[in-house]
Image 1: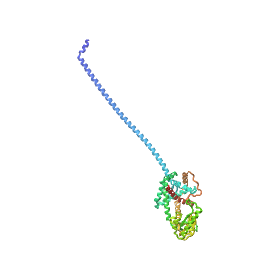
Image 2: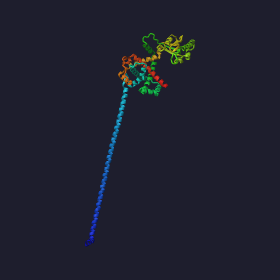
Image 3: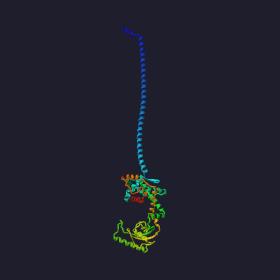
Image 4: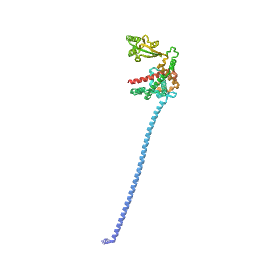
Length: 435
């Protein structure tokens, strides 16, 4: 107890202790401050590290995005490249096929050729017609290629002379190609519509040009042609007989022969008409009144006769015996009926005006173009193409020359084919108009 009391009452000691305590507290505070400061620095550094890490992450993300985008772009480029490659290949195949059709030829001539594509349209158009008319299968392919080549040559010449298709003929073509049923027919036959339209237009152009050539041909050239084609015929008649006639038909509307009783009535009517004109009545007036020939009735029965084999023998024989203005004394019976015949006039060498023979003369000049332009048929290519079109092997042509331009039979067949082309075009136009 005495000791504690002594310590308790020592003020100096208490002061020292207090000082020590204060110093200690100061030290602890300073340490706390240092720790806080250190902690703050650590936190700051951690934040800076985190910030840096985020920057790196962003950089990495951006890099990844770029890589993804780049990969995506590469994939897109690859896909686009593949698509373009497919398109290019498809166009190349189509282009090659189109080029092949339009460059490969089945015939050539000076200044031109008949392409496979054009020939295919010609074949599908004309082969059935030639088969119908009994042409041998072995000559049909070459007949058609000859026509296609001549058509090309004629169109070329026509265009050089400024020949154009008339508006009326253009309208006929439009009627055909505006007809859906007709277009379906062409399509079902595998015919290229644009080429078929061109064929029709060219056909009218050729027809116009041929008529021009026929009208411009000199009478002397036509007469010489007739003499040449008739050889040594000493009885060749080059006259033109301008006649008039009145017909009483002995067939009905179905072209069947009338009964004997009906025929006798017709004969009596014809005889009565003959008596009228012989007694001085105007022939043309009686013809307009009574004639049953629809083609000549309205023109007073006028009919131009040439001794070219296209007029009934009985009629021709009777007309040749008459003088200008004379009426044949009796009725003339033909398969058509009873005729009353008058010769209006006879023209020496008038046969040069015969339209059919003028056209034949022009045809002969046109057909000579094939030889002049050195037309050559590639028979191997032609046969392969025909086999492709028909699916059948082409028959061997043993008796026909490969150069058809020098074969007379082929030339005649070409004339018939050229004529039937216009006929078919007209018939198609009429049929479509009726529809």
